[in-house]
Image 1: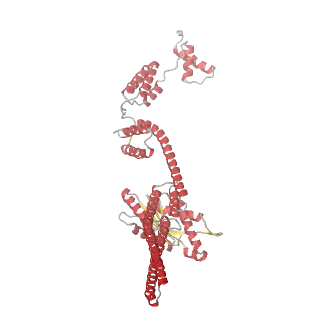
Image 2: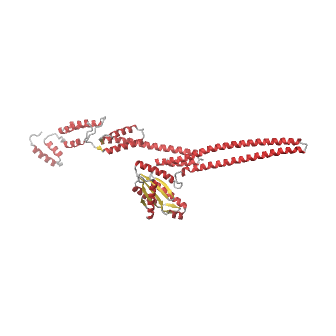
Length: 506
């Protein structure tokens, strides 16, 4: 160390050296020049302030980490790099150790109780849909639920577990999607194979077509429920036809046995008559007097008359059997015709494939039950095509039917999978919209009107713009489905009077 110069002189020379070397007058540069002139080692200044900021940002999650933070604070106060290093390494090692129980630092951020409770309920409700094959997913879910149910929820602990859970849930969800797709493909193959094996049964072909449509994506519980109801109708018809066929077979068997028995009786009578004739012939050959011939002729006449009566009775019985066979056959044909139409006509309109009135009643009852059980809004719309009679008169009834089909197709494209379309009668349709308020229902019908103006209906080469007027009603707490439809119908007529192509609320 240079003992000949005072610190003030060294400082002045350090400033001159900075100027000579064209160095910025920063504290670090000044310290370097000062140490060079004073012949001192150039050691960087201890960064106490930045180190204390770092220490303040570290949060202890247990007693061990808290002790290391106290050691870090003491080492900074002593300006000991070695102490700082040991305290930080100890803090990191304590964080990496597995702990039996996580002690929450009150100063750490915590989730609100209601949010944690709802998050726990969400995890519990989602887990069944992800299957039970992934054990790691179950372990992480249980750990997360345990953290979320603590009186004070540690956000950092929950977030760490949630990251791993999200990763595992992604794999599980992808696996469930693949399983669903594989099951649908398998179901398609089974249904198609049944159809191939039973090409002659038109009623079965109708079931197969309906099933293939029901299992086509998007797959919803409502579609499957509707398909189940349709199949039950067909199964009832099929059971009736099967039972009647068994009865008819038994009747035919009995009639055939009676027929065979009658033939045997006729054959026996014929043989007896033939024997009588042959015996009479032999007697005639032996007669020598005319008066002996009369009794013999009476025997022949009586035998012939008896044979004729027996033949007539047999013919009547055979004709009765034939009539009964024809009636049974006609009854079976009628049963099969009813069976052919059971799938299509049970709950669906054959023209538009929307639900018919019966299907609407069942769907409405189902939605109302759900609405009252879950306390969610239910809105419904009744729409009527504008100027439909004029369209029918100008373009014909076939064009009118095609227009109805066109409207139903466009409506289905705009509807959600949970919505239900039904043909209410003529050119009127009803749309059920669960989980939908009155305002959202009106917005949905307005969107349908806009979509209908974009999708022109073609009648031959002519583009025809189809519009409709609609009334929307939200079901009241104690209101019946029929009353809600009446209110929607009244609102629809108000829309007609207001100029058509409008949506009115009830």
